[in-house]
Length: 135
Ligand SMILES: [Zn+2]
Image 1 (tube, rainbow, N blue to C red):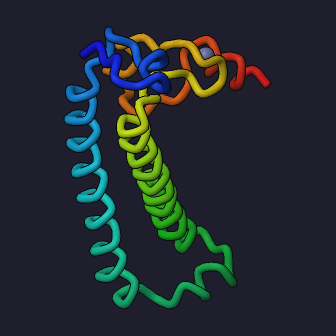
Image 2: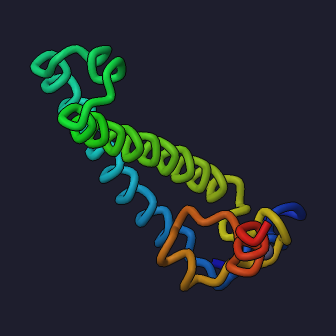
């Protein structure tokens, strides 16, 4: 695990992080997100043609159309998040290749393995994340 092959990078990769393990977690998560995205797209393809035109739902904000609009907005939010997560996962996989995986992008310190275990595509350590959220 301790790679001392190059002057660059080796210093930044902690021996405590098993990148192969996290690569597996990331690839697993990626598969699930891609499947979720496909489901969402399939759902839209099926329902959009069945339902009344979208424009009517936006034109008159009546009570009976509100629920339908809300449901669809919820779907879109989910979809947006999935695509966001997918980008995060791909970025994390790239960082594994670059040898910078598990390093906080804000402070440059090592992100604890427990945090990466919970969120393999985390880019910030807990402290920096909290700091950002406070702003
Ligand atoms: Zn940090």
